[in-house]
Image (tube, rainbow, N blue to C red; front, side, top):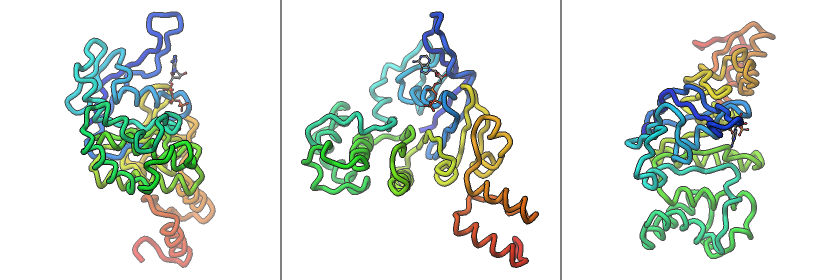
Length: 290
Ligand SMILES: Nc1ncnc2c1ncn2[C@@H]1O[C@H](COP(=O)(O)OP(=O)(O)OP(=O)(O)O)[C@@H](O)[C@H]1O
């Protein structure tokens, strides 16, 4: 589903002395099927933005359009429940929301709420369990007997079980070890492709943004600061530093390499291995065309 923000403003505690404008005149368009990273320093408005995507909040001014659903200050869509069944949100530390006796019941909770039949839920669970890297024997166990990483996968499975068109991920790897982070992000990448999802990733990690997203939006103080392809936006060190962000490590390496050897190797989202090959080639006197 396409997502469009048009001149969106959001004010917390509007009309009180504590009113705070968290989103200011924000406009952007996310085409259906994109994998977008939303990046910004603490307090830049990322969480507020994603709460608009499933109608948890609606704009104080401006318009949010998600597929055929429109949210404005004075019109909440009547079919809000339907919207929530199309936009799955994996909140930060989603495992904290697990509560059922068994893994199976926890995963089934969301689709049950949306009126999905028992047979269909069972079918979905069979598909989702391997996709999130869990095993069938875990279904009858208590989610609280599992490891932290497994609990997170159960919580993610619960969101996937509603079969969303849009998947919103709020810092989905927070608190996981590097291996767990990589596994979870690769899993989202696979699901994105396989299910034809529109994925919105909120992250502090420039590495994840550059590796997984095809488009990035940088927020600063509730407004859009930069937007574009990761290789165009995440290489602008000076502009990023101004809003307390840094370039990805690979870009930093190439900038240092240029300073040290006077050779500019363009950043095209190469992997570490590819960069090592590029550097080797350039140091041996080769160039782009060799
Ligand atoms: N319930 C609230 N009442 C008043 N102000 C709020 C509320 N929630 C958030 N804010 C303020 O709105 C601004 C945007 O907050 P938001 O949580 O959207 O930022 P964020 O980019 O998600 O931050 P973080 O990276 O720390 O999660 C911040 O200045 C924050 O203090």
